[in-house]
Length: 254
Ligand SMILES: Nc1ncnc2c1ncn2[C@@H]1O[C@H](COP(=O)(O)OP(=O)(O)OP(=O)(O)O)[C@@H](O)[C@H]1O
Image (cartoon, rainbow, N blue to C red):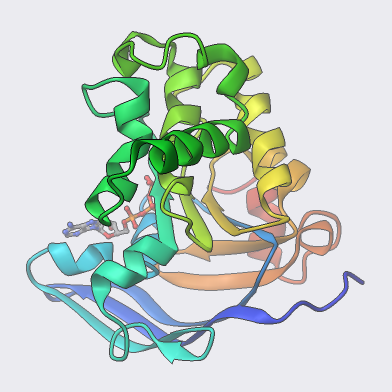
């Protein structure tokens, strides 16, 4: 049994509707801090929708209704926290690397500048630390003024991770962060996630079963808006309780 860590998130009876369509059905989940949590399940089962409820990205979509509660460190994130502050604490990395069309330096300094940091020496330090944490510093330190779009996909994704880290978040949400990357870049991002969990809580949506079993501490299996099973990754992959989970992870689902 893994050592029990304090809960970062407590999700209670969370449902989400897109208009009349119920995309999430009364989800309950405790997410410990300093762990990697993987969300797996077939396409359209609500993984991304659930991920986005955690930093309220769904607020931006018209007709979305959320019921139930998500507590972060005991605070109701739909009631008692400013959404800008929430998104500073809960950063996000997307499927397609999406650096801004500007220099590597400006990409990473973007968030801190928005938060009012202007001093060059301070920005220099944040940029260097964030790029180091994202394991890309050595590859870019001599070309910080070059456009980020000129980097490879795998490098761009690590620059995006550095950009997310630069505002000192506590949680990083990753929505299929390696599905557009080659196997070597994928392994780099996986290694990076494992390093980052020492400091952050990481929640990752993935279609890659090997990836979920390689790097995550806990796995949640989603199916048509329900969490069918959630537990320690080793148990989910080696000894699932639900037949549907077993069928899915062994590729017999259909
Ligand atoms: N903006 C939206 N408006 C209406 N319905 C939506 C919207 N976004 C997602 N949905 C629907 O909600 C359900 C869950 O979608 P979601 O993207 O969360 O699934 P997913 O498990 O992440 O899928 P995938 O693995 O393909 O990314 C799907 O039926 C989808 O069509």
